[in-house]
Length: 97
Image (cartoon, rainbow, N blue to C red; front, side):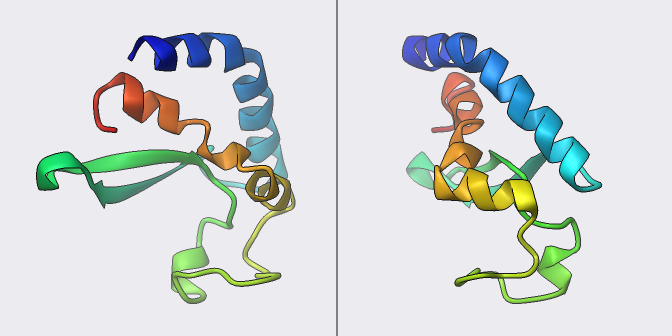
């Protein structure tokens, strides 16, 4: 928890820049939230930066392979460098992960 809090503090400027970029790149929320099963089978909502269009789940398969047209411009870079995963520090901080 302490490492997660420290990471969120140190990464805050970059997280704000990424959030702004996601918001300006395509309409919709900054975060993608999805139900996942955690420790002891407890369900929780995982946080990631949104890398796909908001209607992506209705317009294609759940799994993305290759150059999926539903991925946004910002999403391509965020996925390539795994930056979309950074908000998971929030999940760690609140005890979900």
